[in-house]
Amino acid sequence: MISAVHHRTATVDGLDVFYREAGDPHAPTVVLLHGFPTSSHMFRNLIPRLADTYHVIAPDMIGFGQSAMPATDEFDYGFDSLTDVTVALLDHLGVERFAVYVQDYGAPVAWRIAIRTPDRITAVITQNGNAYTDGFVKSFWDGLFAYTDNPTPETEAAAREALTPEMVRWQYLNGVVDRSVVSPDTWALDQALLDRPGNDAIQLTLFRDYPTNVDLYPRLQQYFRESQVPLLAVWGANDEIFGPDGARAFRRDLPDAEIHLLETGHFALESHLEEITGHIRGFLARALSPARVEG
Image (cartoon, rainbow, N blue to C red):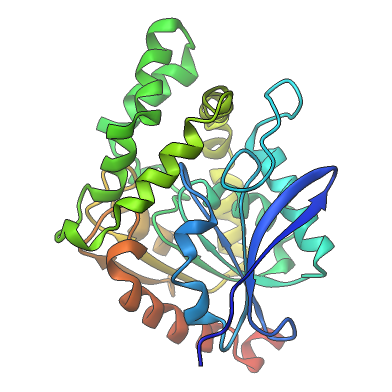
């Protein structure tokens, strides 16, 4: 039986935060954190495949999807602030401990939660969500880091390329073997949301804050070594943003990490939903077993 997915909005710190929710609230919780330039929409097909066993929550970050989009002079757009709102939502919903699925921008939000309150995280699933510099693909990141290092009209023009229809579509299709399985609705929705007045300023502000995520990596890797948190990497191996070395690097600090490299790209759920679902269900059954969680 497929569980119903509920589409809800909570007011958190005066901001409307949209989230998708399914499953029994008394079951172990799995929080799904989306990447750029998308929203919880990226998990629309995964949520019902997990909700028969787990309580699943997938929020839209502030400035993304159906959540509030205050102007840059009304909200401090940065990954610390996105984390603050995510934590406040989980507190509002009474979620104390949870497994987390991260992709792209979702990773630095989850990493901050883990560093701040390591006991809240029961397990990590990372799908092209980096925690090491190993996976940064130079051809993609050189232009972005040129902008973060020295924001000028010239470097901003290069950064703005990431907001164009061509690049949004590229993120979905690059590295996918059979592109016909990826719905064009995905990039059309993302582009419509990016094109809202003022959203470009939000995204550029977050771009400029991105180096703070890399600065956290040493503390995050220490958390991995000390906690030995169960971790599953289900990774689009053909991704030209976060390459497969980013997945392999987790074993440096988590020798028992389970790593699966998939023949696809950045948004692996669009082409490998069933395979990823199978890996997640097997992993969570092991990682969240009563003996392990209590231990």
